[in-house]
Image (cartoon, rainbow, N blue to C red):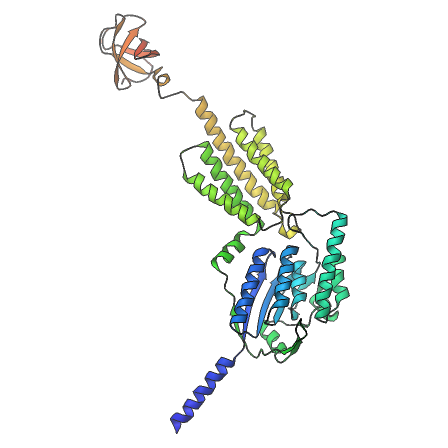
Amino acid sequence: MQRAILGIVFLAFGVLANAQSRVVAVSIDGVVHPITTEILGHAFDQASRENASAVLIRLNTPGGLLDATREITQKIIASPVPVITYVTPSGGRAASAGFFILEAGDVAAMAPGTRTGAASPVLLGQEMGKTMRKKVENDTAAALRSVVEKRGRNSKLAEAAVLEAKAFTEQEALKNNLVDLIAPSETKLFEQLDGREIKRFDGRLETLKLSAPVVVEYELTTREAFVSAIADPNIAFIILILGALGVYIEFSSPGLILPGVAGGILVLLGLSALSVLPINWIGVALLVLAVTLFVLEASIPSHGILSIGGTVAMVLGALLLIQGPPEMRIHLSTAIGVALPFALITAFLVALIVRARRGKVVTGRSGMVGEIGAAQTDLKPDGQVFVHGEYWGATATTELAAGARVRVIEVNGLKLRVEPADNEGGSHA
């Protein structure tokens, strides 16, 4: 009887464990770009496979690209699993693109001390004039308005975040019906949402079951983790310049191989990372000009003018390279911190090249001139000498006895022209 009771108890615990709700959590912490879209898409797929009760998107972003934001919004709307968007931690924000993602969620929530809004559209790699910007803003505002209205939130104020760049604290957002609730932690968030009936984008009513759910963190694939790490414009720029330096070293000192191979790989990685960001081609042109000036410094004696120009062009090119809000651009400190060491290293390499060109030739026929040796036979004036570890036929400018020290002054084929060596010149071979 006792065994039967224990079996029933264990079975009941097993049923309860299996019935426990699951939430797949994924974080957007940084600039929104195409790799963010890929990550969220995979997180939604995982939630669908695991029959999760909801997907939790943690938001702490300064914004991002309009095209990527639109794709993310579409994925949230099409998700078969309810999506909770949550601005966290305290002090965080969901600005610009983050505001669109926040409003797209079935449930929009914010932690105390967070903010949202200031939604300004950015097109990938495109320069927008006043007319074009107005068209894009109106189109973006209309798209946001249609989503917000479906979610039953304040569409007019949401539109103002796009057209007037308005921003809101969590209290202002809640008061003006831009978000559904404020929660100090994920635990409190799930407690407030457990049993809450929500209206999905297609009109279906669904009750959230979030009583002490198991939160499963979405694990980035190796590719996603790597691309996310280097997609930061500052890191991508550093990788690109390190690669360019490696290639430059290889061209300056052919045969080293390693700098050239490593440099080529880094250049491709840097370009790959920057390709997902909005590029300003004026910035690209300035960077190409900078590298060109550094290369020319090795062949044109400019007394450092070309290196200075290259440094200035590199800093300006870095600052103008990314076209987007300030949060997406390369920092001035990064630009200077990369350009100055690059200039110093290239200047050092140029100095070595110039010194090598001006130095005395120590190989071949020209390398024999000035060498000190000894007469092996009497030079009257022809005879034989021992120079540089070798026996040579020689003609002396004056007669010399065997054993006399001589200095090479000319090489004629396989015969040397020598003169008496001063007592202070060279060393006996």
